[in-house]
Amino acid sequence: MKAGYVAIIGRPNSGKSTLLNNLLGQKVSVTSPKPQTTRFSIQAVYKDERGQIIFINTPGVFGKVKDALSKKINPITSQVLGNDVDVVIHLVDHTRDRDFEENKILGIIRTVDKPKILAINKSDIQKPSFLPHYKFMETEYHKTIMISALYKSNLNYLLDSIFELLPEREKIVDDENLPTPALNIDGKTFLAEIVREKAFLFLRKEVPYSLTTKIDAVEEKDDNILYIKGRIITSHDRYKSMIIGAKGRMIKEIGMAARKELETATNKKIFLDLTVEVNPHWFDELL
Ligand SMILES: Nc1nc2c(ncn2[C@@H]2O[C@H](COP(=O)(O)OP(=O)(O)OP(=O)(O)O)[C@@H](O)[C@H]2O)c(=O)[nH]1
Ligand SMILES: [Mg+2]
Image (cartoon, rainbow, N blue to C red; front, side, top):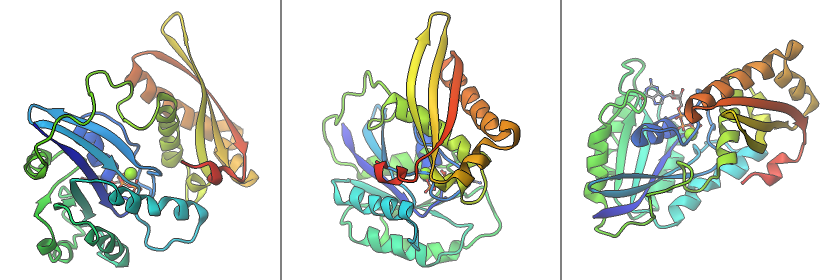
């Protein structure tokens, strides 16, 4: 059989997490319209009769790194590529101009001597398009594929192309009874990510970047109810009041959206108890 590690690399917001989720057919990585949603690399297994692919999703590489959070997040992609990967997927968004940020990624990718696929995402959008800017890069890649990660178009062709490039090898992980869809995060981290995703969706401007989320307890009560206790931790008092919102409306909205999604995913009734606290040093503990 074929087996190997496949890294998904690209600038923030190009659709890497959306692509991973839709390749797998289940959500393992949170997504949002805001850049730098993903903060750590997530590994997940795809398998079919041809073999096994361990996808490694990465956080988007920022062009200009100024803040403490980006400084922690930006090197992750280079670290992933420093390990053994068999194929690299460079995901680009043709609806955005190819600027120095994309060149920075290209620079990182050029250091890797492995087969590379240029996947041009968001093919469902016609305008604006900077397609010629990306087509120009084609010669550096084994293959160029137009896809829509969101609408799942051409993903089968992308998978075919990945399998073609992967080596013949035995299974890398035992994929029969994986406890969580993603290999390197536990259940509580996954729940915390869902809450963080909703915070990214509802909160504006810099507020999502001021916070992280933690799940402290998950208890199963007898009548199919899951009791989840979580915290949103932010760096400043002024953000805390924005996260809570007038009359507690914002935190309620975030909690409700997270609860709905978790109920669908687990098929259980969820009781989600969310509180907000301030800790200016939460960056230090980031994975
Ligand atoms: N129209 C369209 N939108 C897409 C497509 N793929 C992703 N998106 C949207 O682009 C935005 C960013 O998607 P993500 O998957 O979070 O992007 P990412 O590359 O993981 O972003 P970071 O984690 O911040 O690096 C979301 O609003 C997605 O819905 C696509 O094929 N077509
Ligand atoms: Mg992402």
